[in-house]
Length: 303
Image (cartoon, rainbow, N blue to C red; front, side):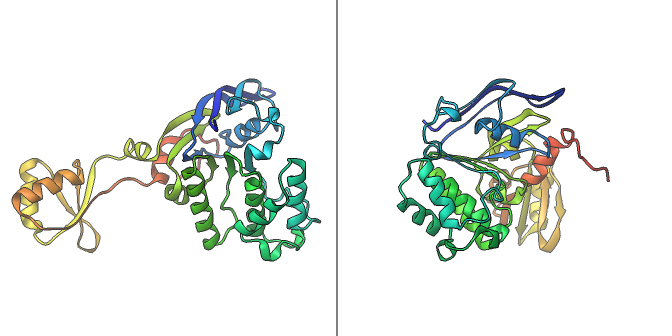
């Protein structure tokens, strides 16, 4: 199974504890966002998962096995940690061919992922001539090379143009829909909100949240509705009787605190008040994230 299991994972560098008794699972079939301030321990956790560093204590396994136990690791786990890591003197095709040979992957797979990453036309160019966005696409091609069941991606949209960002977004959704495990670390909150299903949030090496995107935002959103109606005075009177206040907002809209949109819809329907627009006004992922991590970042600024 492609399940990632982190159990009491701890990493010390001298007297500095970077990862502090972490325990969580990353499940297949969904995109899991891995969030936290700089220095929270996200990159270290990924390095421990990939056998690039050893834990002080605890375990980090994939399908019940350590990464170092896989005979052909690229067939099991695809990772994008540093798009600058590829040898700049090689061509994109030669870089991928070298990875394929070392992991018993058929050479034909190289052409497939070059096409998938949009690099087929520049496959014979040296990587030194690639832009950051092109190197990012090459890193994704390398991660996909072994058709793995698990993907670990660190800032996968970094350097990409809008078309590339849409491609990455749809790619991650598609991989998860196929039953793969996708763990994505990114600081772009608006982008995370567009494709992430589940969140794991760290702060100072500790687990702060392990929950669905919806539950994470709802837990930090007080009930508030935003609406438009052709009869605001009648709606105002109804809400006043129920103990709620209609407040003018921008562009002819109104807000009501302390009550969800569904309840307002029920009241309006009962009184025959036409509603032109009605929705819950929830906080953004960015607002919810900052609320949770504000006191857990060593680099917080003061306004």
